[in-house]
Amino acid sequence: MMNEELFQVEESSDSKVVTRRVAVFPQKTPVKFEQQRPPEKIVMTFPSLIIREVICFQVVVIVLVIISLLFDAPLEELANPQNTPNPAKAPWYFLGLQELLHVFPPVVAGVLIPFCVIVALVVIPYFEINIKREGLWKENQKKTFIIFSSIIFMLVLILIFFDVFSIAVPTLLIYALAVLPYFVKKKSPFINWLSQLSLAEWIMTWFALVSLILIFIGTYFRGPGWSWVYPW
Image 1 (cartoon, rainbow, N blue to C red):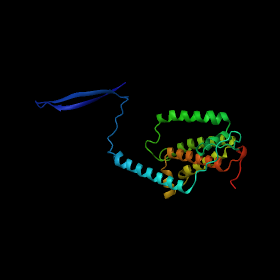
Image 2 (cartoon, rainbow, N blue to C red):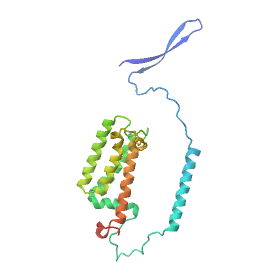
Image 3 (cartoon, rainbow, N blue to C red):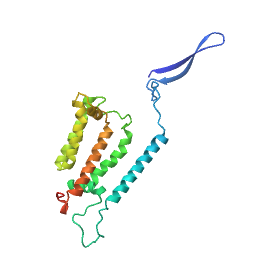
Image 4 (tube, helix red, strand yellow):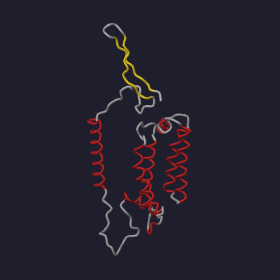
């Protein structure tokens, strides 16, 4: 293995040029020498971030107070073990999980999906995700399209196999919006905005949309025996 040497040229008192070896390091060194980049803009946590968080917190509190004054909480009578409601619905924030338990087998919804979520939480920190916040189609567009499309269509096939159209339809909708900048070459404000969204933002959008749809279906479209009913 060849080594690289770093020398320093000095001039002695008797006008002789002296070359002094400063360091020796292997060519394949684990230390990366990068070019000096221009300094980035520094934003202080206080007051730039803290003030915005305080304002958002106050806005949320005001909105919740207004909603609580205008609408009563949909509370029912005291629980009676001899007269259980049909269907027995969980709180709204658990209705998405209850809907998954209905459409998937119990082993899939109760074991496999939570196991995949836990594994993802362990593995994701070891990947460089959402560091550069670059658009999905900024680099290697063809390779990204093939990998992204393959994963989406495999997921949709699994969802269709279990008749989970409540997740398959929003998945295809998010996919259509995500690949729109890849096919549409004519730039517009909407296409530019879509092209700037990173993979993490698309995943979060998909997760939020699916959660809202499952909660909405569990709240308004499930009746006795968890059968499909219409709100009217």
